[in-house]
Image 1: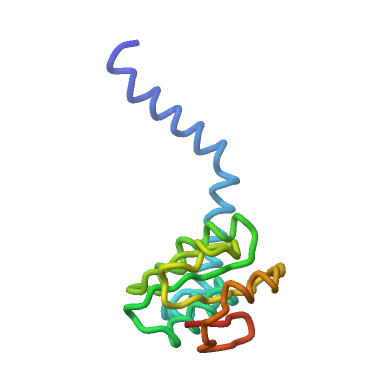
Image 2: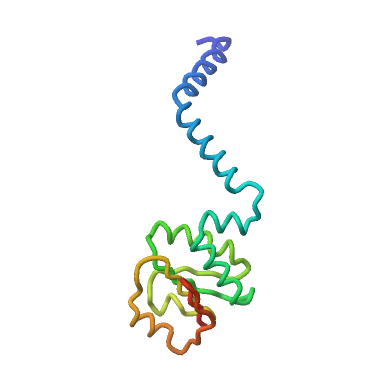
Length: 150
């Protein structure tokens, strides 16, 4: 193939890709338009409350009841996929606090931090084990889905 034909071939490949991808691209653009309609012009707090209502409320409550320089262990009983999402979102929204997330009720999960927040989104904790882990800590806050201990 000569170098003068290369741009024509590349343009043909690009056009073929666009024709094949068009339905998916159109769906993606439609979803983007819907998101902009729902979230455009809102402050980040309002967007967080719309995108992630239970978690964002928990983040707000933890932020209100722990000092900015605190270390907080967030014990979240949820699916593995959501736990990974929370591992990114909780530290982001609670910065500058040092945040660790755990879905286990064990000694290693709560050691080394001054605060423990129990986030009850779904599923049940082993309440006896949880009581043992939180023994000696005083409850700072109790909300609908979050309890904070010091």
